[in-house]
Length: 65
Image (cartoon, rainbow, N blue to C red; front, side, top):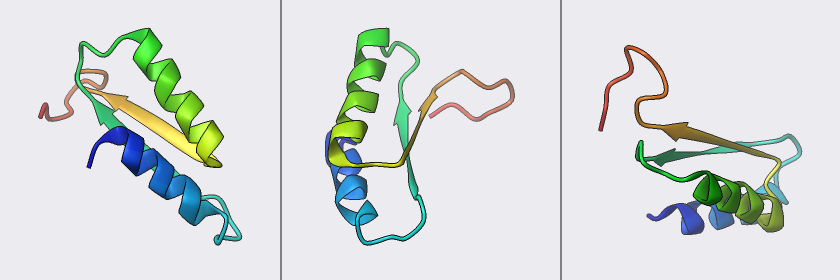
C-alpha cells in the first residue's frame, strides 16, 4: 500500500476511535523535505490525529530495508 492510501485510510478510521491512533510512514533515505511536508499535510487533511515518518538511516542500529 502506498503512503497516500495508508494515511487516508488511517484518517478515515480515526473518526470512529475515541483516542488518537497514529500512522507510521516508512520512506527511503533520499526522501525530500517537500515529500515529508506532503505526507504530513495529507495526514492532517485526512483527519489523522497522529502521523510519524521513519526515514531509512535516521536511527543508528536500525535495520535498513
